[in-house]
Amino acid sequence: MNDDSKRTDDSKRTDDSKLNLIVLDMAGTTVADGGLVEQAFSAAAARLGVEPGSADHAQKLDYVRATMGESKISVFRHLFGAEPLAQQANTAFEEAYGTLVDSGLIAPVPGARETVERLRGEGRTVVLSTGFARTTQDAILRALGWQDLADLTLCPADAGGRGRPYPDMVLTALLRTGAVDGVQQTVVAGDTAYDMLSGVRAGAGIVAGVLTGAHDRDRLSGHGATHVLGSVAELPDLIARAEA
Image (cartoon, rainbow, N blue to C red):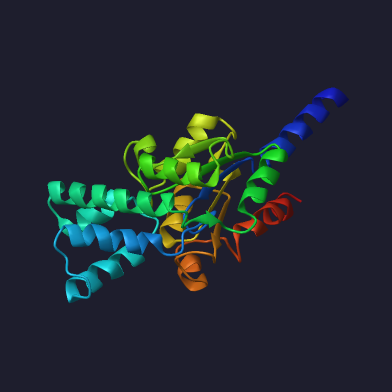
């Protein structure tokens, strides 16, 4: 092998070690919504006759908390059973959440915008993903002025309808962007157990939990987090250390 060929092979090995596809959750990870999911759920449940303060309401709210990160229509299918009721609840939830977003009740997690900008400045591809419907995701992006912040945004419908804990959105990010050659060059970050499961099932090289959202360190670690961070702002330095 001549020296030029050796340099080419060495370069390829270096490139293959780069973590160049970063899939970030939104609510709780890059977006602080102050508990709007629970408020919107309560509004949706009330529309379907679930009395606020009742045992039924408390039980359903506990399930919503436990399944943070999951596709919301999947949550409502579990809670209300019949598809028409699930769709009605989901529509009511999305409308309520959208109204709260439009009222200015969300904000970026501190350092989130700067994190995305730094990662992209380093040549990495950043994807924002959510368990919300596209209309709600777009409302959040508009409210924050983030329409062009990431390379790609994904919701469950963009990945065939299955949200977390399935790996579909992470794999869709890889297929749509072509940013990396293998799943192990992907980084997934989120604040819920379902984010962690999604990253693990997709084969991501780093599955990072953050403590700015729904679930605590033990819950994140117990569902496969390779690292647990205080916030997404710590992610670029983690990636740099992993590549060193």
